[in-house]
Amino acid sequence: MLEKGYLVLSTGDTLEGKWLGASSSVEGEMVFNTAMTGYQEVMTDPSYAGQIVTMTYPLIGNYGINDIDFESGEPALSGLIISSPCYKPDHYQANSSIREIVDKFHIPTLYDIDTRALTRIIRENGEVYGKFSMSKEDIPKKAKVDANIVDQVSVKKMIRLHTSSNQSHLTELSKAHVVLVDFGYKHSIRHALMELGCDVTIVPYNTSVEVIKGLEPDGIVLSNGPGDPKDLDYLKHSIKKLTELYPTLGICLGHQLVAIAHGGETTRLPYGHRGSNHPVKDLATGKVWITSQNHGYVVDMASIDEQEWQISHINVNDRSVEGLIHREKPILTVQFHPEAHPGPIDTHLIFQDFFNRLVRKGEKQYA
Image (tube, rainbow, N blue to C red):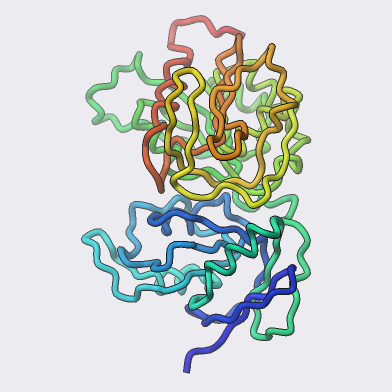
């Protein structure tokens, strides 16, 4: 007989399910992702650290798990909730099932839960916390994701990656060196940069400006990551300095941190944007892009100094800020994920735009 497990919520609701793998008592912020595919990328995205993720698509695991689509070395999410697991995946690249990956990485997982009802609870209540338990009488105690959550997912030491020498379309002059400041970066971000011809040095989130200057980068990327951006307020002076020294691209949390560094504010969304079909309007062209997103906070539009910044993108559904471009300096930021994974590659051109802004060898740096 399959062992019952319970999800008890801060709203007072309790949902019954079954354990996929070992039972485990764990707590976290409740969020949901609406993507129909990409569960492997969701499970391994460091931005989900401290969160229990509900997949709204009912069948999870049907194409298995492969060696290609990991977004980190090890999953960081607190727990996973699915409706129906597939035990016998069918895909030529698959080498593991969802059950095997849950067991391998000890991901607390409940299935056979009414994910539609759970999603409604989160949508109606906004900030909801939950706990996996063996008892329906239990209650969650956590009131907020750990303020130091980024420290748990960022690299601990510098990693230098070189563009493959067999990329024959690249010349030495077309290559660039980018420092990727890691707040919980996805591997597909570094892949996108390297495919364009960038050598990438990944550094811990709290690396000093002086150390980064010593690496002699052509540009800076501030990555995605988990948690409340206000918890990293103490980094705003160093982040501002970096944006004054180098062409900069901020992605998701990185976008929010650039805004904070330049005097902006962030606010919490009612229940976040998490999925692979969020419509975003490019205000320069009027074109609407379909984007991949994973965030619970946004930049407050009223806090943006529009004499300094141009709002480049807005969310079609709620009109929230999805992108910023500095009016004088080569700084651009986006709230969505241009590398997708999972999701459409509509906005991959953001990386090309950033690459075009990088200082070339032999050219004078603007700052």
